[in-house]
Amino acid sequence: MAQLKLPTIIVSNIDRLDIEAAITHHDLSFQHVITSEEVRSYKPRPQMFQQALDQLNLKAVEVLHVGDSLLSDVGGAQKLGIKVAWINRKGKTLPPNFSPDYVVTSLTQLLPTLA
View 1 (cartoon, rainbow, N blue to C red):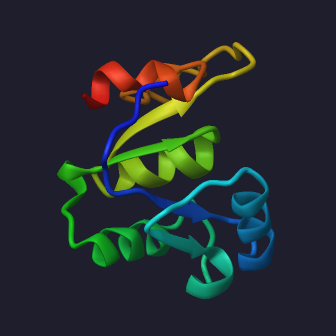
View 2 (view 1 turned 45 degrees about the vertical axis):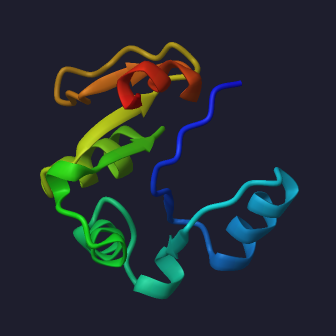
């Protein structure tokens, strides 16, 4: 499997203990984890996305947010000018009021875009 060396961060509406348990269970690693519990705000509000930008010292135009929620992920990130890849694993129809920059069915489909 191909591997990329990119800064990675989780921005999740799940509490810290729950997301850490999932990360450990799947043997994953991330530079930072930001949760709604810590920021005291839920996606699609901008606070979590801004916290991620601040922690990585990046501008919105330098980031690709990847998520599976049209409202929370696509809507929230795009409000800050962050490009978004929507993971549409179940083949849902894209409503006309959303326009993610990329639509993929799996993370591996993003590899050519990120390379």
